[in-house]
Amino acid sequence: MAKLVRFGVAMESDLLHEFDELIVRRGHENRSEALRDLVRKELTADSWDRGGTSVATITLVFDHHVRELTERLTEIQHDHSTNIISTLHVHLDHDRCLEVIVARGPAQTIKAMADRLMGARGVLTGSITPAALAAQGGRRKRTHEHRERS
Ligand code: NI
Image (tube, rainbow, N blue to C red; front, side, top):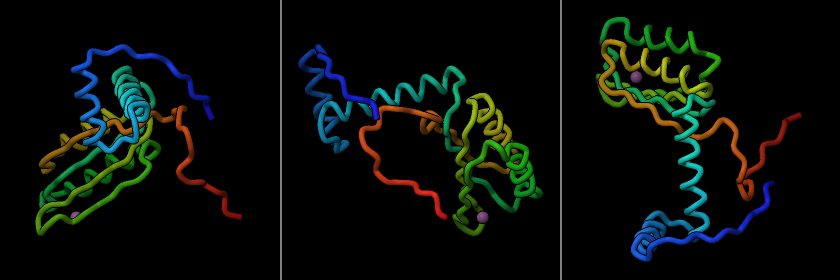
């Protein structure tokens, strides 16, 4: 666990006031926690932009009546099976399905897969969101333990 380092930050009072209001709206415990979250978010975005290894979600809404679309989406995901951690499928209504794919790997690879999925005919909307660095330090405490089952 990394040790905490204190450092001073100078900021215009107006900007700090707005930051404090953001902290209240978002329910952060304090400025330090809010600042750590902002830094993590920027590091994740920067790593993603530079093609680093990331965890990202791909969200698709599609019309499952479109011929061979479901098979096509499954085929693309099988081509990238080593990069997919999990897929969630929700039958939204009579026509539309929502799929959320959690992927891990180099940003280029995930983007390429997302482009193929979103480009498939019958996909109504698609988005890709970098969620986290594949590995990141700086977490102060564990929220839960993962134990090996024997
Ligand atoms: Ni469905």
